[in-house]
Length: 284
Image (cartoon, rainbow, N blue to C red; front, side, top):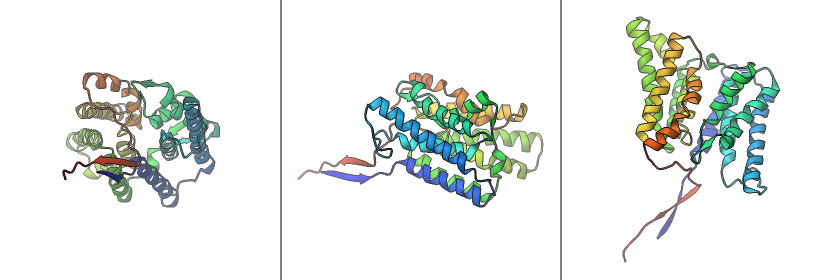
């Protein structure tokens, strides 16, 4: 007997949550709504994704009927740019989306793109142009953001079975920060809680480092990789006074993933289709 089971793609949830976060920032955190920039981020990403898919498959698809599901990835990457990357130049928005989408097709090893698209787009744009920046302070550290990101992020990472990498990063980074701020420097616990509950930190932990297409395939490798990113990011932020170090370290550590995949063999992650089939054998 063959039973069809509805299985929603986790990327639908991530798109919905990112839209919620963007609306929350505009409506409740008093962000300036940069509608032109948002349109350029999203429009450029979707257009480039459509062009790349058309070139590869040599077929012209309706934008929302790509068999590869690439439009979901492009939309997620562009929404991440809307949430995190700031610039005063509209042309840089186009460049950032181009970096994000094209990196998936140009920088590939063993059927996987090397870099998280949105992280690569952010870092490449900041380093290449010098006229773009991250603004972690725009999120604040309110309890609403903390619980919303944790709860909604938990849904996404559990659906793609990558909760291990999120927890490894958060526990390592928060643990090192607690030792330095509370135990060593004797700072108030409130300062520590504010440091680890910012919206940008939680968005990174649940929606960027947990990307199953750019993380190591093996569970142990994912944990080691996340711990390395957290440890170096902590060092740079605590002792070198650098901002937004996790995103930069995610890009810097990405080339280690193919090495982990060779050393620790595991099944390559594949996105599920909207429906999966389950074979049930029943003796009669």
